[in-house]
Image: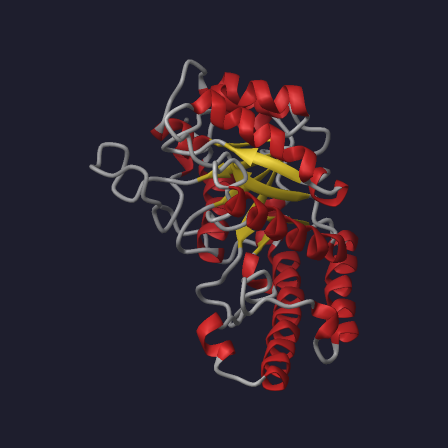
Length: 320
């Protein structure tokens, strides 16, 4: 890749060659911005008062880190930031979970999250969530679905503070019958609050559900499809990338969200599902540059990968 040092990231983001908003996912590799977490095991060793003090400290630190992350995105011209599910650590754990209102300085923590929302809105930075893979809303097990709903409601609570408009999840398991599994996903929608339902999106994956599997439900239930082109290339269906892009966009009532990755060892490698540290600009579908959308860059080098891709697209063009 060519050397683009000295090029302004903000200028690149504003380039007329692309209408895409590039997104950073959750963490940093080089910037000293860190989100803190803990384990249920560590918390449960503490007294209730000690536990609440520790959780308050962690939540406040993460609220501060989020604001720092958004300032970084603004400075670098990065248009979206995915907030990690552990922003409030262990929030819905069966034994160590808690209500934020029960923690010391709860009002101050919420105020700081709201400050992030105000900053993001003022600087046109989109915030989104992508709950962990254990959030399976179509499981045949009632307890798994119940916990998934609890976790989604937690995400919606924080999303309201920070102004996030997306809570994106995978379709879940196929359990030997994809059509029945998708129908079970759709039935669970009726159990969600409006706060979750208005933000919920579903993503095609690389092992179970293709865009073609999910699109009928998306259209019928009004659930936008977050199109992951890497997953689609790993698990193709009858749709071309161009067709899937257009079909996914038609499910959105706001700016569409896409996911982008490159295979660690190239498309000829043994395991193309594994993500590379960076993005090959040739993996950006050329049809994406004719649309307005957010593209989350799922690459292991995090902010370094996002900035490199922004520069490559601006200076080197797109070949795919």
